[in-house]
Amino acid sequence: MPLATVQSYALLGVKAQPIQIEVHIANGLPGLTIVGLPEASVRESKERVRSAITNSGFDYPARRVTVNLAPADIPKFGSGYDLAIAIGILQASDQLKASDLDTLCFLGELSLSGELRPVPGVLPVALQATDDNLNLIAPKNTPEDFSILGSTRIFCANNLCQVAEHLTEGTPLLSPPSNNVKQSETSHLNRPNLCLSEVQGQPEAKRALEIAAAGRHSLLMQGPPGTGKTMLASRIPGIMPQLGARDAVDVASIYSISSLSNPNPRIPPFRSPHHTCSQVALVGGGSKPAPGEISLAHCGVLFLDELPEFPSKVLEVLRQPMESGEVSVSRAAFKASFPAKFQLVAAMNPCPCGYLGESRCRCTPDRIAQYQGRISGPLMDRIDMHIRLQRVRQQININEQKKTTTSAEIQKKISRCRDLQLQRQGCFNAELSGAQIQAILNNAPHLAELAQKAIDRMDLSMRAIHRITRVA
Image (cartoon, rainbow, N blue to C red; front, side, top):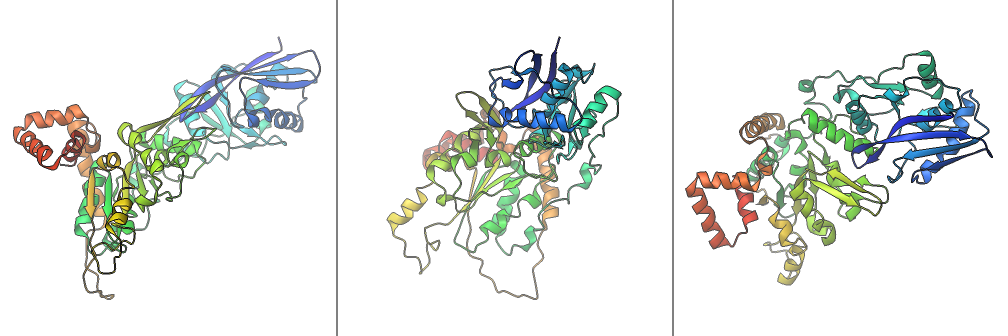
């Protein structure tokens, strides 16, 4: 029977959903019909596949070809189905006799000449294919580093002919080049050449950065211009330890579906979007679900400079992901989830001109209140640490610089702190649940009494008490 079934995958968020590509060739007017909720780039694949098959030395069947992408209720996006559709057509037309198609899956875009081109999302597909005990055949020039998966089920090809020769004659395909650099040797790779010792003064702010990085606490720095808020924030990646294997895979998968370069997934990401970004750019979404800045900062830092300049509606969408650690994008036809366990670091001026308390400040109380009121109380209540920076009053000597602790030394301290947290409670301090915090307070009556006094005198919410306990 002129029927073939080929395995591929569709991306829903960072998860890969198995897709069965069924190809049927029947008598009738020549043509190719693709069904199964294909969007424009999938429907256009019939022209790419037709030319690729012809230019690769095969005969395109002059019959009616029907391609079904099952399950039919999942929307199909992108050009990654080209290779699988072409293999299905060759198999159904008896030009390809492969007996092991049930152990293979295919992903890649075809050019008109039959060359394979990379597509986004190869890494999460490779991860799911490995879990499903399938061998993945993908384009050779795919930029992802598969070494973090530790899988031997990934093979690369240059064109359709190489794939066909592999299926019919057993010609071996190359495995992707692996990165043999050990995890312990990657601490210096791809880190910004910025050291915390370059920041003069601000010892309280430096200490706050250490505490925030150690426990993954959110941090808000407030101070006049020129006090080093942006300079301090830009040096956070240099003091953060490298990621573990599981977190590195998650980060690499997010960057894979975003078509963004991530040379070393072991390094925690640092994202600093401009204050003109939209809600979709910050949290993700769109007609084709894509991760936003908070997901690109997963297991890393999201730095929001000039926090009050962000639109209020944009800032408010941060509240739910800061609590849950993920963001869900719901549309009529699909629902996708993206991880968003990020560490928020923000900076702001005390008033519109930035010089509150100085003689040159001309801001009225109403303008100051309006400026600071752009950040809502619920959002401020979710930020663990608040620190005010003052101007550094010291004599500048360009020939002498006071020696301070370097980022590498602080990174070692933070690594030890994080190891202690994981041994003690299995998570970082910022991720402690309400039950764990309540257990701490119950085991220390004097702390519970102190917390109750703080609630009464300072009118604190229970979330604020939990936040203070996590930091402590």
